[in-house]
Amino acid sequence: MIYSLLLGLIFTSFSAKADGKTDTLTVKSSMVCEMCVETLTEALEFESGVKDLAFDLEKNLITIVYKPKKISPDEIKEVIASKGYWADMVPPSKEGFAKLHPCCRPDVPH
Ligand SMILES: [Cu+2]
Image (cartoon, rainbow, N blue to C red; front, side, top):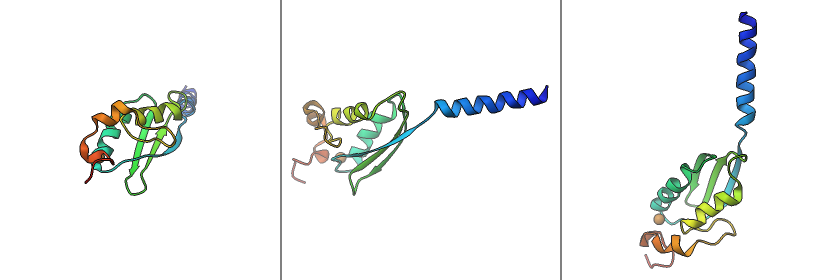
């Protein structure tokens, strides 16, 4: 009785792990300041399938841990671009870029 219960637990945790397979994507972007990081965090953290985020402002890299079953690298890049930022070769959307705070826009003199 106890033995079969244990087996059940092992099986459950194993299948949960298989289902939760994640990949890591690193995207080159165009962030300027901490506010850019905030904007992109807000945009990405509630996307279904996005599990973890890391930002490197100096190198302008965003690292995204995601579930490939729920979201694709292209979709992740679209979210970043829609906010007005470069995502590798995907150009920033004009609408997103226009909404950026002036301090987040590389074209506005600092
Ligand atoms: Cu900024």
